[in-house]
Amino acid sequence: MPEERPAVPPTGWKLAFPMLSADGTRVGFRGVSLGGRIVYGVLDDARCGYGRRHASPAKGCDCGFYCLHTAAEAQALTCATDCGDAVILQVGVLGAYTRYERGMRYARQRVRTVRMAACRCGRPARVFVRDGTGLPGWRGLQANCHVCAAGLRVLTPAEFGRLAGPGVHVTGEAPHPADSTPPLRQELAAEAAALRARLDHFQERLRRLEEGAQ
Picture 1 (cartoon, rainbow, N blue to C red):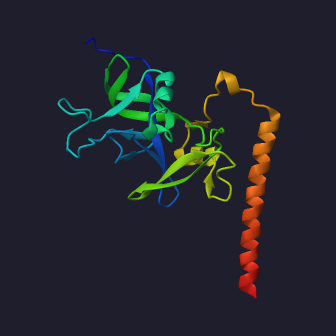
Picture 2 (cartoon, rainbow, N blue to C red):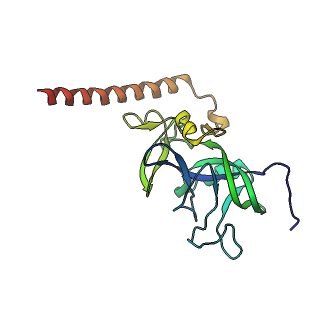
Picture 3 (spheres, rainbow, N blue to C red):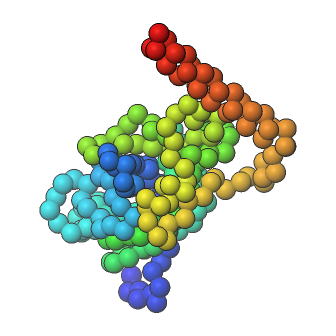
C-alpha cells in the first residue's frame, strides 16, 4: 500500500454509545463492538480491547479505532438491533492509520460532530436521558424525544456539547426526504402530549408534598 501524508487529518464516521461521567462533569463514548468496555473521550488514543499492553493499532491484533468513509454507511449500521441507540460520530483521524476499502483503522481521533439517533418511538430525538446501562464511573445515555423523556432527568444537546468541549457540534438525526417537513398538526400534538405528561408529573409531586406536610 502506498504511504499517505495528508495535509489535513482524514475524516471518518462511526457509531458509539454516549456516556456521562458519574459526577456529571464529562461526556464520553464507548464502542459498539470490540471497544464496548472502554470509554474514550473527545480527543483520545486507542487502547487494546483485549487488555494487552501494546500501542494500538498493533500488528497481529484487532485493536485500534475504526471508522467508515461515509456517513451513509454509518447510518445504515444503526438499523442493526444492537446499534439502534448509538449516535453517529464524525471524527478526525489522527496518528498512524491504515486505509481499507470501506474505512480506516487508526491510533488517535478527535470527535467533531455527534449526531443523535431518532427516539425509539420514531420521533426526532431532542434530549439525552439515562438508559439504565453503565460502566464503572460512567452512565449510559440514549437519545429521546420530548414526549418519551417527559418527567425524566435530561441532558440537552447544548449541555452535552458544553461538557464535550470546544469544537464538538451536537445535531439531530438527518431528516429523510419523506418526513423532512412533518405536518404542523403532528408537531403540535407531540408538544401537547409532552406538556400534559410534565403537568401530571408535577401534580403528583405536589400531592406527595401536601400529604407529607399533613
